Length: 420
Image (cartoon, rainbow, N blue to C red; front, side):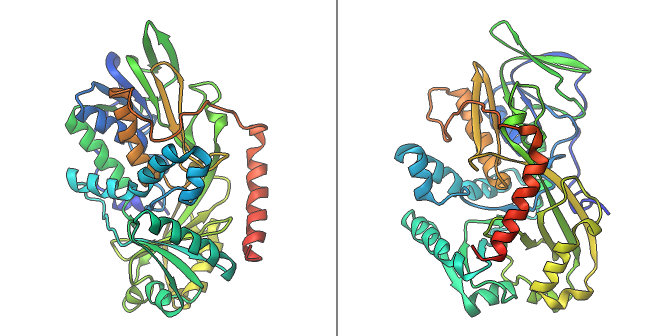
């Protein structure tokens, strides 16, 4: 079995390895959505840009995620403003709330064929105890003009085809797409705009070179005034402490065969995407080809077979018993980055150096818009930052993260089962 997206995505543009030494205004490390969006927006602004990727554009979690384009951050808007102050918090809420619209505009503007649809996001309660949280979110987002509504009972069952959930917040800003096609489309757009994108080119060393930087690879080097580190869950030790500032988690997804009729009309008929609230999140959607994609926390490794995530298939059959004979054709996983405070982290640890990572499962929308913001910040460093610029802080006992993650998952499953 393989990653469904690799079997169905648009063709990848040519991104040959770096050959020799070169110069640019900006060198970006990592061709996930953050790096690709940054390269595109820099190139559109006329900035000479080189993007280095160890594998190929979209290889990491950017091309393996659930394909959900969800608005907002982990926390409700009032909490964001309390944590970061009114002025910065308002910018963060506006940025994250508008991030899906930014994605869909990029798709339209550059003609990216990625099955993009904007049918909304359902944030579903798995127990009645979660309903007050949804009502709080509803009130706070409505105060900010967001198109959200609380669905319960029969109205919710009609949208999902299951009676599993006592309530859900329907946010019409959200949607879905094929993330690997999206990443490849961003790469093609960046190339057309003038960026140079090199696959199979791992950055091996980062050092000062006069007033700028030098990024060395096995086949050459690039000198630039600015460096952007956009490696997220696959961050290594290129910059001291950055890898230890996030916890890598493995997600896992299974995809079914295209749903036969009448199942296609009975399972998630509204075609909104859904993610459950709780300590351990399950998420799913029906893609543009009529397949059910369901994902959640996987084993602490990458997978390539549904036998590793039988619990997700069992859960799908619990939601929709009619799926008992459905064939599951694909299974895959990838590594994403979680931060300790569950906010994305923007760092500027040295002059001319920017790092942005830790989207906590909201990477498609937030990484896209952060790429544009990073580009804007490089072009005009006097502008206001859309996120707090924080110091790189290593997480204590980082080497024990696999044990800590397993313990957190067990604790979360118990908490969710108790409806807390």
